Image 1 (spheres, helix red, strand yellow):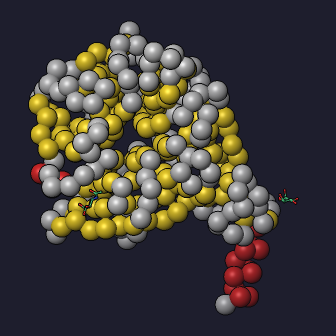
Image 2 (cartoon, rainbow, N blue to C red):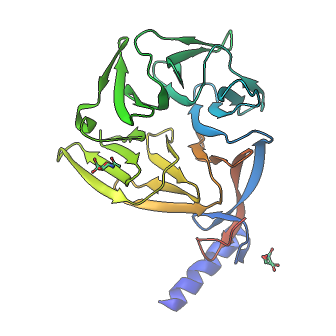
Image 3 (cartoon, rainbow, N blue to C red):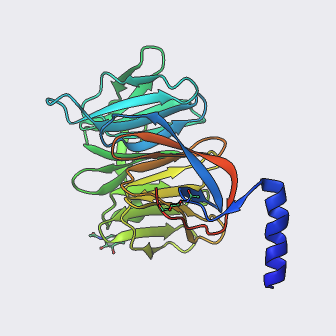
Length: 280
Ligand SMILES: *[C@@H]1O[C@H](CO)[C@@H](O)[C@H](O)[C@H]1NC(C)=O
Ligand SMILES: *[C@@H]1O[C@H](CO)[C@@H](O)[C@H](O)[C@H]1NC(C)=O
């Protein structure tokens, strides 16, 4: 067994360059380099990528003392950064890729972003204080401080029936219509086929996201996790301290938010022995 493993690693080494005990950030045994996309930004939160335009939307704590939160975006090709006007307390972001709509959540309802004017316009139908948005066939949102989960459709809101009797702060839906949600008790999933809610784990989740294929990921203050579509198991991808959120680019690169910056993890050619690294 050991011999086979060593041989396998040697073959891998030739193909890949070096095998080390890596310092730094390791994802799936590959060492990753940090590329800072934006620094000096306070607590960037709730990241969402529009794959049609390669744009990362997020909210952050405003520098303006009169405001609480601002919505902003970064063009992932040009690194152009812009604060979005027209929204009060912009906090949540989600993209309907098929419909080409960018939704933003503020303290008084849901907004739509216009790429031409770079302004957000409020959509009639709800004046709820939006904590989080997630788009999967429908637009899901959670309401603060009640921790109620709704679907917003045709200018109307209704409670997600499966979650009507429970609290949900963050919500995400997978490719099989299973609804993942978190509250202060941890992470839960409502399984579509069984029509039953299961406890997944005691995670202190601060952000859900999906990749371009609809697979789910989440972050906690200390790491990035992947929800394996097939096994339904949670896999830890990497440990990073003081995480605020995560998004996955079209090519699979991880973008994460730290206390004061947005960072891309770029794979290098270095193979590492241990998956779980020593930290940054
Ligand atoms: C890894 O980090 C340790 C302690 O921080 C340091 O002593 C060592 O030289 C580093 N190794 C590499 C390959 O950078
Ligand atoms: C979180 O959700 C689970 C599943 O619905 C529920 O049992 C639990 O009471 C909720 N926690 C809180 C603090 O409401």
